[in-house]
Length: 380
Ligand SMILES: Cc1cc2nc3c(=O)[nH]c(=O)nc-3n(C[C@H](O)[C@H](O)[C@H](O)COP(=O)(O)OP(=O)(O)OC[C@H]3O[C@@H](n4cnc5c(N)ncnc54)[C@H](O)[C@@H]3O)c2cc1C
Image (cartoon, rainbow, N blue to C red; front, top):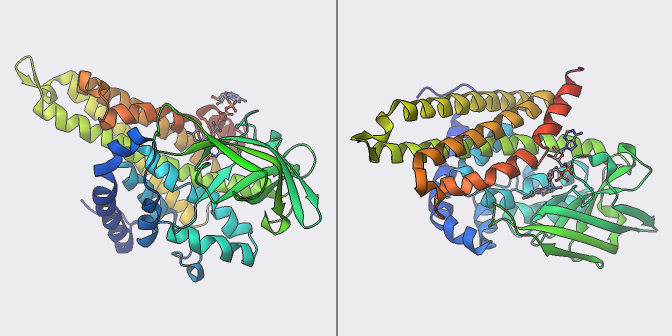
């Protein structure tokens, strides 16, 4: 197939390297890991050793330098091919927790955290959502009060990916008055006194670590504040754009895997004297899946290219996230129909992806909130 001009030789080499890595180091083990509701911590070091945490992080810390959203989308798309979204969700909490540290952290804080994260020795997480609500970020209630050289943090966060394992939590806290202008980002080391976490069980992403976090007079050195006090809201919103690209690419990968799994089944399975793939109703299902995946992927590639060239297509990223979750939902449904009863049996990637649809349609900004954001950006 002709290579699209957005992809350089370096991108293609990167894609092949990741595809091999995922096929050998991850795919053979995902059933076992998902059933065990965790994967070995050493996987972080393996991922770090091949440089996969480095996109957008300074070369002086061991990163790959300037941010390339095309590389980010390749990583996420290829990891989705393993058929268990929980692996990428946990590993790449680094890509939502650490970028604000790169952008807003002091030289000392960056030197303390980023090199270890890049090697896979340290895990970062992002904590925005609270038990009282996740969509309305500007209403968050976890409070951080300055006390000399420390902040004293009180409150809770919930549904936090890597919440049990993380070494550093990039937390959205209220340092000022009500609304977005009272919000700051503060890195909270998980060995700080007054911090503890409890695990959550989920519909899908079983091997991913998800937790509720508690801050009980938790003392955090003030040097862990990211950027300027009460100016964290903008950092959070910018970070969401990268998270959305990561999620979109993962959904494209998962949708394509549904298509591939169903196709190999439909070519082998015979009903009513012919291959399942020869029935017109089934053929149309494949065309519809292919149509939606191709459209979503082309849009994703365009957005990655625009972001690479300095655009901030906030409305389109929000719209494309909706497009991607509807595509994934459709493909999971149609692939499951084509597999019939086999799709309902554990260990089948389609069964797992079916259970992973909702978290993609809700996490990182739900479909409703994405439409609302796009409407505002479009000036409606
Ligand atoms: C497995 C998992 C992992 C997650 N990981 C993280 C993480 O690492 N860090 C983190 O900070 N968060 C994380 N989240 C939280 C996720 O981002 C939130 O669940 C999401 O933002 C929605 O927030 P909420 O669940 O509080 O729903 P709410 O905000 O209570 O909304 C509930 C429903 O109402 C809808 N709704 C809300 N307001 C409106 C409105 N104005 N108009 C129309 N509909 C509306 C929403 O779309 C949603 O469907 C994770 C969630 C899950 C399930």
